Length: 354
Image (cartoon, rainbow, N blue to C red; front, side, top):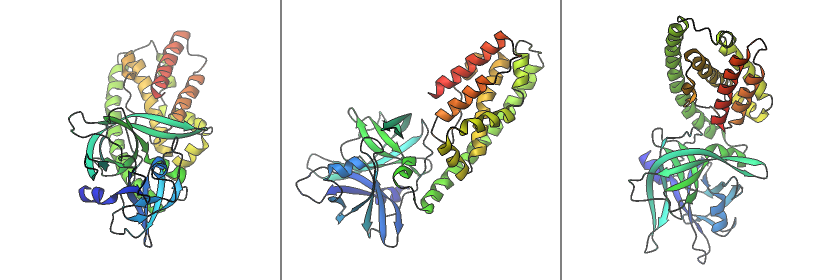
């Protein structure tokens, strides 16, 4: 990753010497002598518009352009630049991931400098423009760093320090540059619907590796939970007996409410099916049910405070809907006290997803 990252990042300027604004971009694909680069839509605007964009010394064609206030991404085409390596793409950003950002800024003598800065991914947020939603991540620069986000870093790749995959594109700096906002790499599909399969394959390889690691962790956690369940059930807890029996077949119940929720999110259902994630989605729903189940078994509501469920796609609404469907399906024979305990736990998990 060390050499590829710096070699891939390119200065974006204007062909007009009267426009001093600039930004960064990076190579994502090459095909028959043409290089495709990813940057921000507002960088294109700042350097004078679609006919004035330069990549290094070359005039570029704006191949795809999003909205600078919504999906702030643009894809540029340049003939040549074949020695610049494409960066791998992944939409596996999660809060707390260590990241590297490589982009250009200008020093006091007007020299453009390419520099890396380090930080972590923060909260997931959403930009919405005319009903269209784009996933964006808070970025937090390390407090110990001497350097921070400056004008020119827009369009820089946000790279997962562990895997070397690009998970976002810097879009805005916040305040003094110790914080910023990065567009999730999944938004590339919004402006390039027929994106080459090779780019998707790179992304899928990274995601599959991460999924395999997470599934092993899930299996280990399941074994530990089973041991806890056996111990606790042996104490003959009768307070939530009917609720626990209803939740005993959580795999089947999770698939049922998950399938019903997906009926109202056709785009999400299509994405899961195309990427073979549907089974994993049902497993994630089951983990939420596991939290509810063991919270009842142990009579400890605080088990719900930090549910670690890694979601295979970034739209929380489908998970919220699945939990709402679960609440609606609470059997009528469950008595009022048990029902209230169940509903409180379901509502709390829903609130954590908002």
